[in-house]
Length: 348
Image 1: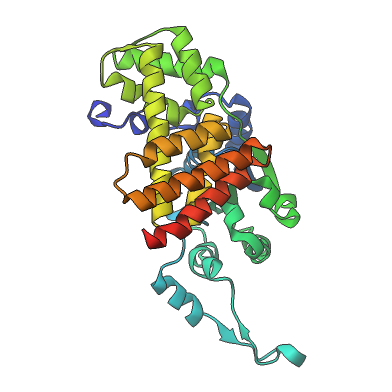
Image 2: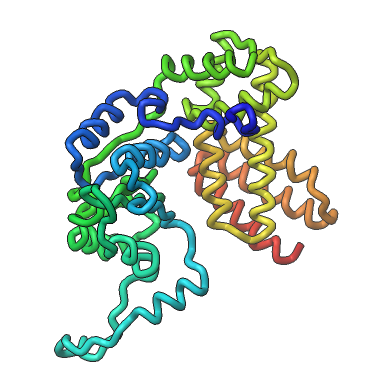
């Protein structure tokens, strides 16, 4: 069955908690929770794509056992509600008849995301022989000020449902939430575990790869297994021998694809997503500003544009590059450039 799965990152996704690569200390703590049949609310913190959600989901599956499907839910705090869901949230608001003073007769409503995505699940009683349900909230920091309302739900329904909150930005989580959670810091997998997994995949896929190539793969992906496996699969397309030249070439092509996507995002005028992607690129590939602007310029020449539009965009990149050379904050200069491209895209 596994041989029929074309995407390696899915093919080699762990199916049980013990199958997770490395993170022995985290796995041991979670297994203690499974054994005791109890655990507090959890907060998983770590870089994007590092495996936080995979670990949380596998833990939930083993904790709930045969009652997993009826007592588990995963929601994404950064996914906007549909118009139908917003309509439902408004219909669930009610007029206060019990409050006094200036609040009397006011419309009382829970934040829409919590009203539609969270409350219906946490209010429903546990089904089966398990102590409580499990709710995973991914990208929890996107709730912003609505975290206070979420905190109240944790207190009210905590005996019926345990929450596992996942974030990349601990600074955006309010103290009352953090004080109610057991915190797990999920770091990149260590090199020894990374090497063992890559060698195992290479053997199963009949690939030849040397240890110095695995070391480069570890460094270029920052120890992120999903990215490493994707890159390994890309390299395997052109032959079963994985060497440094092949790995480097495919790594560069992957970077260029992401920067091309960044430009297209700007042309659609989607500044928030473009800024988020640019920060991801800078973090993942450790680009300095000059490298970033150089690749942007190269990819820009491949996109069909009028002479005026192309020259205008080149000028914007040149201005941003000049300001960055003067020693000003790189992220601000890149964000400023992306904002200008988004604005200019309205006239292209």
